Image 1: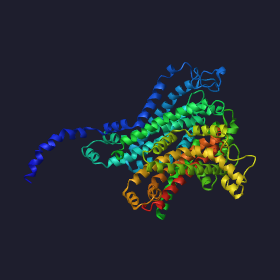
Image 2: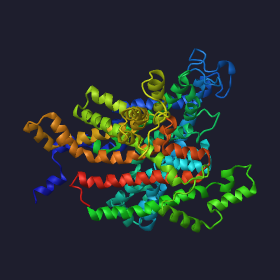
Image 3: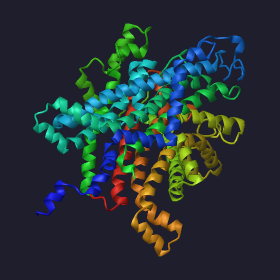
Image 4: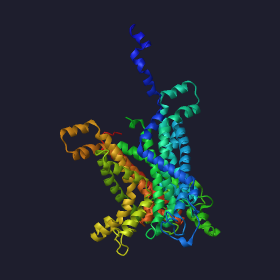
Length: 306
Length: 333
């Protein structure tokens, strides 16, 4: 004992020399580590590039094109791609490139608001269910079960059938159907965090529930929420396009990509460009979000790390 | 196992009740007077009153729900406002058409997805792996209605290989017994009709199956990668088994559980996606039935159609859950 105690108090010169290096490794926060992992992921970087590209296009839409998205020009009906009309024109002579560019605003907006709505309500309900448990948990979880028992697009169609077809109602429907996905995720995360010792310590110190939630529980459940939100963006955009395609979302003359597809499908043989470009745009944006989401999952999931 | 099955069936009751409340509420959540909305602004007051009477909208909410549940338990799904015929008898041919399409799509998705995933995992980081995974990533990101339109354009209209619309030749209708065209043409011994029915299935089936295929491929790959790294696989390899036996007999057997979960969940995507696919390919399934009902404001059909699709989804997930313990005896309940 006597010989061991002093060596513990005064470390040997060897370990002391290594100490700065040890500290350097410890300083790396999990977020910084995830950032490095993400930077190494080529697919994720391509995804980020695609999304930034579309955001810029949406922001500077009026600068990119001399046309308005709803100017009808009978003389230019279904003209093929040319220098004047890069992506050709549709059956009303409207410039498709212009409509795609303005459509980017709609798709990104739908994705943003639908995901934000689902995220806020889902997180709120998930936290309440997970943190307070008992009958509140029972009630909220059963509601989630019932909502998830419907195929998602079907539930969205039902909601739009009630509210009436419009872009705004489609957005509300998409937000609602995504609530249980976030809710369940947050609930399970909260339940596992609630068991942790640091929560018990916080409680023992007399911390209020609200503070524990915002200072400990929420920050520690952020990683899966971020991944789900990124992937949710793509899903929401696809769902909005599907509703638009069915005539249950955006209405004419809104340049929504799904609506553009259904309006032009009868001209697919004579004017394939009318169908080609809106479809490619939807696919690229969704692909971008999926690539980022996959990359984030790999970067934030400790199980994937070597 | 039996105890688990019973418990799992009992757990279904609150979900089914909840589902019935949701579909029941559809008509009641319409802003304004539902009967007026259904009939349009031009409708007379008597017509509105008659419809309210017909739909029982005058009664208290709980009395209405009680009647609704009583009818459902008797297998009565209500009456269509447009055709005035019983939805229960109307819906079956549509349901059979959707099931035929969904089964074809799922078989396609499983065969292609599972094998692509297995080869990707086996030859990890090879060109095949990269190619398959990029195709899978694109497959998940593609709007299926766009894929359907593209297929229709290329394979039906430009190349003329496959029919673009419907389930069969309308001038040579199949004598329906089960309403499954493939089955019926086999029972009737009509190989020409079998071939026609199959050709009609290919394009919508592939369009519908693409997303599940991509997801199954990704899941199989990651699940297989985990299994192939385990010790017992090394032992099997050291024993001198052929690679095909290592992969399929020893490897995939243990990687199948997560794949099965995805298959169950994706069936929901298929049932939902059927609405889009059926609209594009004029497939007379339940998705199109519901979609047309929305256009006609035929709310009883909307309610019952949605309920039937959701019910199928719940049953499929129940079957998948019960299959787990059959396939993997290690899972005990």
